[in-house]
Length: 178
View (cartoon, rainbow, N blue to C red):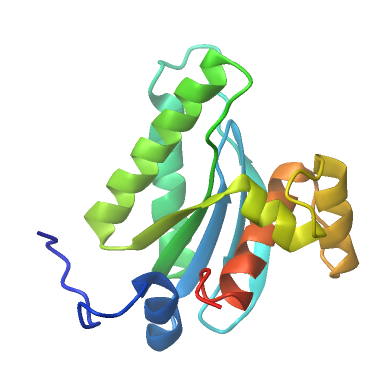
C-alpha cells in the first residue's frame, strides 16, 4: 500500500504523465551512469539539460557517488520542481559487471528517493528511446546525438542526448500512452 495516495482513480492507465500535466510539475529524464545525462521540463515548459559526473574522488568511500546523486535529485527538485515524474533509461544489458553494479546502485537510489518524495517514476527500454529519436531501435550513440541536434538541441555528449530524447519521448507520447 502506497503512503502517497494518487489523485487518480485506480482505473487510470498510467499516472506519471497525467500527474505531471495536471499539477504543472516538472518532468525529469535520466540516463543513469557515472556520467548521468539529465533533461528536465520545468512547470513553465522550459527544457534544460546537462550531465552530472558522479565519479568518486580519490578519498571517497564506495557510497559517496550515491549520496551525491541523492543530494543532486533533492537540489534539482528544489530549484526546478516540484518534480511530478521521473523517466529513466532502463538498461537490461551491460558491457561489464562494474557497469551493472553501478547502474543497480543508481536505480536503487533513484527508486528510494522517488518513493520517499512520492514522485512517480518509470523506466523506458533503450530501444524505445533510440527508435523514437532515430527511427531505428539499435541506432548508435552518434545517430542519437545527431537526431537530437536536428531537433535544435546541443547535447554535450551521448548521455545528455539520451536524456533529451527520453524527455521528448515522455512528452510527445504521454509516457508511452499515445
